[in-house]
Image 1 (cartoon, rainbow, N blue to C red):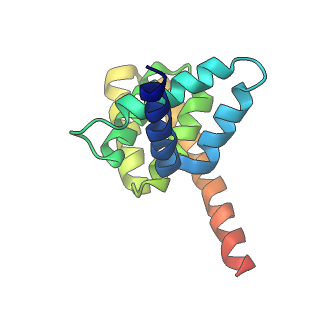
Image 2: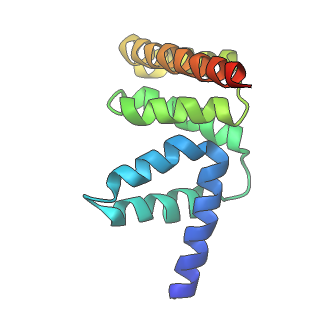
Length: 137
């Protein structure tokens, strides 16, 4: 049983790094002092099981996640992490903003507006990071 858990954890950690290495590590690290088990569950179940399933690409999974978190309207920190992950796995800003726009129809304009403002903030942070990396080289 322990060996299976370890392999699920390792598979999940690898998948998390593929999706968004830096932000994912920050989330897991932030749980270390209050609930390390929750961080382990996120890695094992979320990324070792669900994100590792066949049938959807990482891009499709991130679009679905952005849509769900936008529609929830109560998970801004997680939405921002997954907006950054969406960029990281190669989704375009248009694909991301159109997904958020679609949520206006099903989750309401307030949820879509909040999602769009979160995207605007993440895009600006991403631009700053890219600009800083280019300037460093």
